Image 1: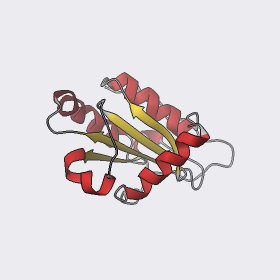
Image 2: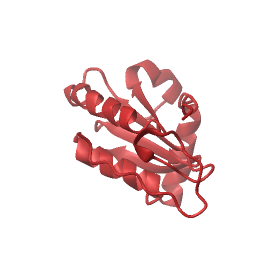
Image 3: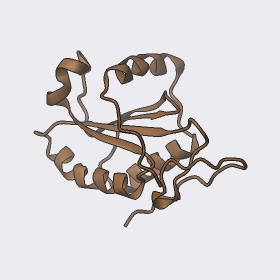
Length: 145
């Protein structure tokens, strides 16, 4: 069972991303998450169920699992050495790029911080990751409520 408690809406914030678990965000504040993993990685294989469960609990958050080997031509020379690696974008801007301990509580806290707008990358890092996001596959639009 998840301990994820999405950020409550701000006054005037009435645009749901999707209904699941009450996740809401201001217009244009959509949160998108990519988990970059490798099939050969046992930690990634174990984390997949947790990631999928979080995606199901927060259908308003666009979440995609990417098998690195399948996307290596698209991602270019991106060198991921620690798994699982999460990339998070909010309102089109990268806000997190890094490995995550493969525990549901860590994922829940990270997603709650993303929904709350509490994550930021330094300008140089944000610029680097913007380029990576341009090469990632497009996430489908959020499901209707």
